[in-house]
Image 1: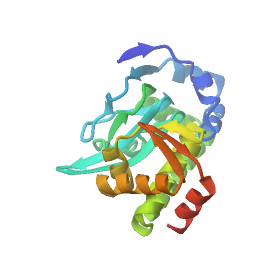
Image 2: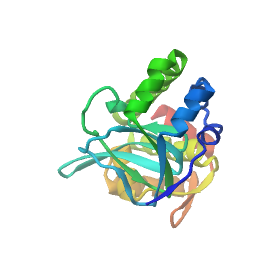
Image 3: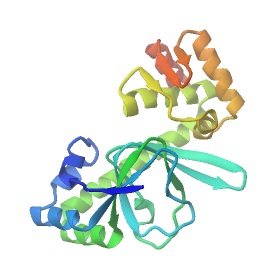
Length: 232
């Protein structure tokens, strides 16, 4: 991994979720943040944070795509995917617990790292900033609830439709994209067996909902995929 310079204000301009929290900082506070951060480039496949290790920092994904995963012996699950302009690591902010998950780069990714002490100072100095951070944490919690509902209440086809639509709309902004996940990862993300993922992808292709070519997926019938996602 390599170190690069980072313009924090520019890195936040494209973030719908995080723009307002940084805009609440004073110029002095922004400079304080700038002078107390490091930016690290992680290459595809590199581990950014390992489950069970101490994490004394808050991370901000400036660019790229990562997965948050947990493993216990042979059990493996992907909690979520995060793309640019998202925080990582707030779960352990107020305590010294070890990281509950592993963060892995699915694409070359830039991560800004700031110590918890620096963020804590900003939270105590700026109540509006603290409120915006709380809103972000609450929003992430709602997303977690929605994921839990999908995994426990939807059928297999609905779960996979959810992920394909998420990748298309929220991450790549296109109906055609290269799948960043292996079939094993897709299975871990949708809580199903890899063979089930392969079978359902084949079903979607046979029904002309999608087309696949290697890692590329093209959504051909978005309304039907959305219906499958909705009815589960």
